[in-house]
Amino acid sequence: MVDMRIEDARKMVIQASLTILQKGLIVGSWGNISLKIEKDCFAITPSGRNYDKMKLDDIVIINADGKKMMGERTPSSETKMHMAIYAANPRFKAIVHTHSTYATAVAAMRKPIPPLVEDMAHISGGMINVAPYAISGSEELAANAVAAMGDSNAVLLANHGAVSCGKTLEEALTVAELVEKSAQIYCITASMGGGFLLDEKNIKTIRNFYKDHYSKRQAGKEL
Ligand SMILES: [Zn+2]
Image (cartoon, rainbow, N blue to C red; front, side):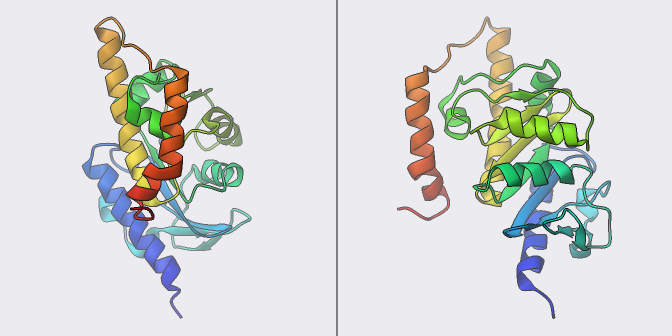
């Protein structure tokens, strides 16, 4: 019998993959997306498969032990990182890993994105930190990403890209776009002599408003 939760998750992951491709947040088959199905089980994009050619069976289902339960292909090489982020952050149900241009440029500088604009403060609560470099697919990279993310919804990976998380796949996609936009604003303001940072008190207020109300309104759970 077909488990509709699994099939629905696979459809959502494929749709989200096409979205990040169309928005220019990834190219080819790089980057990856996962979506939790239940407590210790999630759907994830396969390794090295172009997003515009993916079929439902290509999306791999991973169990609590990190083993492949279903799917014909090899799971994303960053599966360990997705597992580590879910384990450390039970609040997250979806992860979008992108190699978008400006976020990756800042990550290659090994600098955090500073809190210059309010929408970024909503999703980060301050800096978007950069995790120290470790080769892609390694347990070291997974640990570095978890440690650098802290309470934020996003983190940069040095010389690599960005990781964006959410309570829903929709939220994780929005975070991925906001990370890229924030990195772009950082680069533009830096080229003009540098912008003014939001102060910590206001950032805290903005972050709490996002957690308590704004993200719920976006998800249709508050009027
Ligand atoms: Zn990557």
